[in-house]
Amino acid sequence: MTDLALWGPLAPLIGEWEGNEGIDVSYSNEKDAVIETPFRERTSMKPFGPVTNGTQCLYGLDYRMAAWRADEENPFHTEVGYWLWDAAERTVMRCFVIPRGSAVLVGGVADPDAREFTMTAEHGSEIFGILSNPFLARAARSRSYEVTVTVDADGSWSYGETTMIEHARVPGTLAHTDRNRLRRAVG
Image (cartoon, rainbow, N blue to C red; front, top):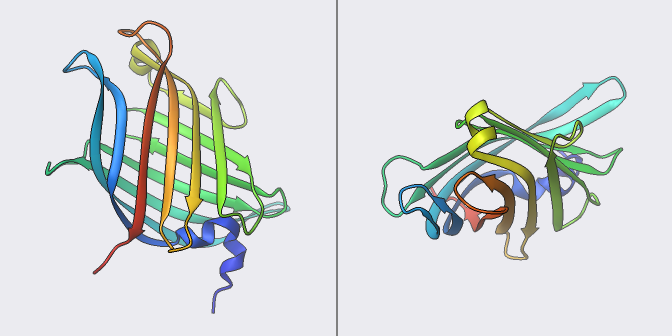
């Protein structure tokens, strides 16, 4: 039997998840305005580990996520990557890529039994950072990213995330936010 404690605060996230309470607040090129879009998503978190790198030992979740607006057939957003737990450093991490040409590595400190934790990244950071393709760097540069994950007593979990963006069509810095509550998928 696998000792789920090895995954620290990530252990409750193992499994297949669905959520239909999603809200995306972002700039719409089509409407030339910031709009609020409801969405549904499906996320898969498969455990793996240990992964050793010298004295470092990580346990992780291989994850895949897709989100759809209303009854659309094709997702408007997808991610693939890993959530990682480094017990020695008490650090949670998430590294993921988005098929628009972005790669993100976020991290934060957490206790092994934490039911809530926050991970952050900054553009230009060599530790927890954000990379974009040349078009996105010009048109919608992500300056920072923060996500807080909360595991609820009923076994569901939720997240709230904010990406601060310098958007070519919006003065100043734009807060692009997403949030959702996920429950174990049935069937």
